Image (tube, rainbow, N blue to C red; front, side, top):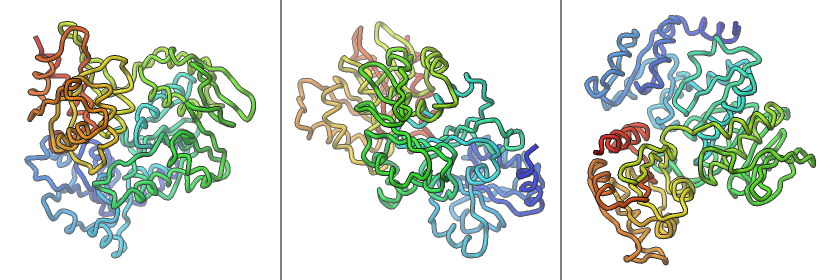
Length: 463
């Protein structure tokens, strides 16, 4: 029984509640609020036909639909739930707040009502894997875990079943954090690099949004920061509670670090040797960093033996260096989650000793691609490009100081089918082909999952 949740749901009976966005993450919320007696409106820029099954389900759940280009300016509500993708400072939303409308989000309300410990993870790269590793650690240690947030699952629909001694493990994006004024009990920031600059007005707004994950903590809270990332490490002076850092480069006074190939934890001078990095089933140094972050988050809640057992068996998250299949001696991997240049450079291109073939390109988030060029020249022999960012990536590669036209082949294509066909035609036995876009999926796909699933379906259909 969650008395706070009961009181909240009693308070919204008969209220006009609007949800912005009729996507899969909002549908459970629409259903919940209708069942709790709210007068629910679901609004979206798309028309009913383009919404497909999501629109049909929203109507079946009992919501009124508000659709079309002017959907935001026509909202009439007491409470509006902003979707993470809708900018907090959008003119129509500012106007609603100025009229006294309550503008909130699913995560804000969950944080207000959650009776148990909340561990939250944010960052530019690695946050989904780190969040999942933390949840796997806690489940293996016997905790009842509620996993959700930006990872794809809303948690508010299960708030009434959350008990005091459970753990909520939440991934938070900058879009969710920008309006939050409550921080988790344990906050993790994996790293920060330019991202989502198509939505945020500038890099500083993006950084400030991420910083909200620690700004509202109290003295009993814990913050886990990446010592090796200058921006993330710069948050240190704002930490009010316990500060733990993780590093692959040096020892830390409190947190996880590497001693050669061994992951250790320094608990204010007491060093525990936990596992060899080769115990980690999922490949890549970036995943070693993810484990360092996760270990630092749960230290004191999960013992070292349990952590090691998880590392040896956890196979990773779909769309993150996910092995698809081998065809004629060529291995195909799906790394569709790599939606930024740093994710491709530090993720996919750090995994393999040999030069590989990659499929890259997609929606332009106005992120600089120049740093990616030298890495591609060093690690890639066949670069297949598609989408809006294709010219930017090609330019970054060709203008890099280590570019050699004899060492890398660049092919531009128009769609994923053509990209896989080129990869199949020009790769030979022993090669590795990876979808690693370094770009967002929008424009070509709804999200990175749809992009990754399309790639996998094409690869799995190869004869």
